[in-house]
Image (cartoon, rainbow, N blue to C red; front, side, top):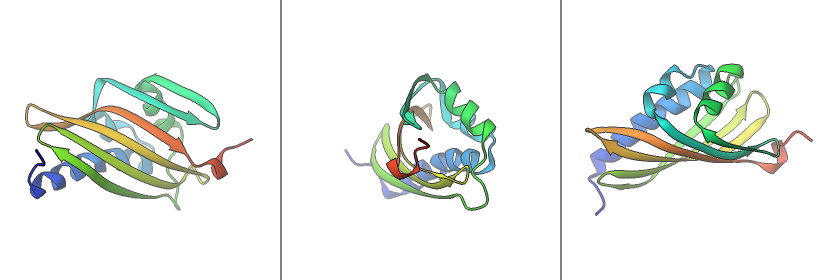
Length: 127
């Protein structure tokens, strides 16, 4: 059953932690959002990244979004204890555009991310 519209705002606020970490190059905000067991899947410059969310933290802590970084959060679905969020990123590290899909579960009254999958736009892949 679709949740109340007010719950969409709570999901968006949770996803903002992800965006803030990417923009500032500081994983501490995202660490509040992701479970320790969260997983990551996607291709970065043509190389598959998969496994622990620690790889995402490493990427974020190594490269900040930069002054031209932009992001948009779209809450696609909220179903009582499950939420799906799409985050569009432009200009990460001055060159990469991503589409991220975050899968969140409501646990003990708090939205937590359990998985992140992403696509790097093909025109931003370093060859």
